[in-house]
Every structure is written in structure tokens, then in C-alpha cells.
Image 1: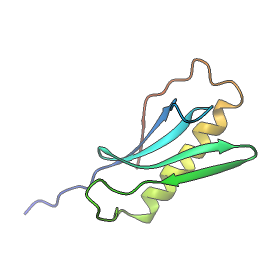
Image 2: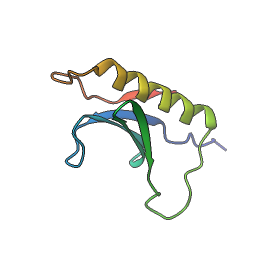
Image 3: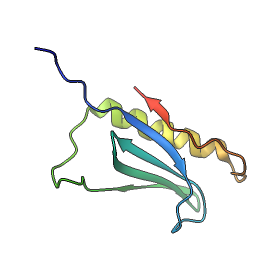
Length: 92
């Protein structure tokens, strides 16, 4: 029997209507798991419920890596987000 590999976490920088700056969305397959955003001098994380009502279940290391990568990508934007590539980055 072949073990099914879980969906990977991806990070996509996005401009969303309810935020002034770009955010880093963390996706688990096709479901959005979280949004990381800069507010004043601190980063904030907004967690989303799964679409099917069951909790997300993923390796701790994958989530930590995704959060660290989201932080780095947002920090790299600085105060000028113009021309930023918003392609998702694979996190593994």
C-alpha cells in the first residue's frame, strides 16, 4: 500500500481588500490555513477554520517553517511593496 503524502504548505503574498499592505497567506493544499500581516511594529497571525469543520492536522515543523518563511517574505518587502512577485513559495 502506498502512503498518501499530505498536501504541502505554500505561501502566497496577496493584496486583500480589508488590509492596507500585502499579507502572506499560508495554504494547506487548497485550503487557507492562516494569514500573516504586519500591524504597526508587530506581525500578527490570523488562523482560519477548515472548510470541512475538522481541525487541520499537520507536522509542527511544517507550520513553523511556513511562519518563518512568511515573516521573512513580509520583512523583505520593507515599506515598498511595489513590483513584488506574489508567486507562492513551497515550504518543506
